[in-house]
Image (cartoon, rainbow, N blue to C red):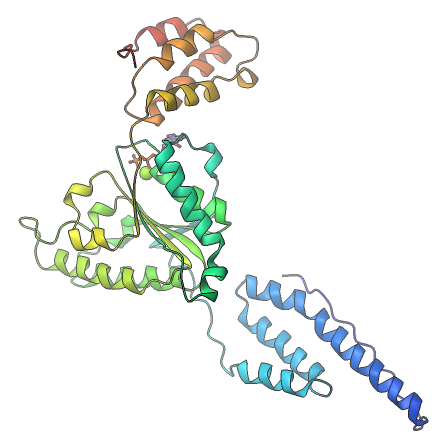
Length: 343
Ligand SMILES: Nc1ncnc2c1ncn2[C@@H]1O[C@H](COP(=O)(O)OP(=O)(O)OP(=O)(O)O)[C@@H](O)[C@H]1O
Ligand SMILES: [Mg+2]
């Protein structure tokens, strides 16, 4: 990380000056000290942002020294907060988690009105976290997304991170489920402890695999211990960590676990309005220049789909054909669609 620099010039005086001059020079020394302390702030904030706790300590110590003479009480308070042995951020357990910068925002999503309203309300609540804190309240932060495949559960989870400017942490199940007794619980603790350190979105896809019902037939012992552990850990998770779980099957999830979620949001298969919105976006003239696709758009708009994903894929297939074959096959592509009954 770049050093943001600190220049503090100190002029030595040769002989004691007369009283008014002394007063003026004391004032200017005080001014210079404050200025120098303020100059340390960008480096301090940047170091904090990058989790470089050694640098945070170093900058704070400089501020303590600079303020010591003229602002002793502030300096003392800061010094008291300096720890002798700074705890470091734990390194990313990369066998268990993937950390990414989010690529999606809410505007890219085609959603039913109810789902969009709920999602926007959660984002709003988190943007006002400090206001809530002033009244001893915390934003609600445990969200379960459910619905059939391909309707945006993963995209929504990422959009939370995109909208709130948070890192997007995704649980990697490959290394997570451990056949050794207590191994999965240990991994769960590692992941949640890591995610608790700083604001982030933690995404647990296929959550039913983890949070399956404790009393399912044949599902004994270890599975029950995992669910119980999850119940405790979710309760302890700080509100700056937005925990987003996704499942296609809420039916098999443990009831007690379901109750731990502050929001349960269903992402349904697309309504006709959503299909129209999607097809108009995916076949808009800017990305299909020189082709009049109005008949195809109309045809697709009156078709039912199981997922937004299939609408997107169909439109991509058409666009690909426009590029590769000047649209020679699009009539065939569209003819295979089943027109839905009038809405
Ligand atoms: N609501 C949506 N709005 C816009 N695009 C969508 C939406 N849902 C799905 N898509 C498209 O389908 C792709 C897959 O979506 P996504 O992975 O978010 O679905 P999912 O619900 O998580 O599916 P699965 O249950 O299989 O994990 C996206 O990359 C996007 O192209
Ligand atoms: Mg998904």
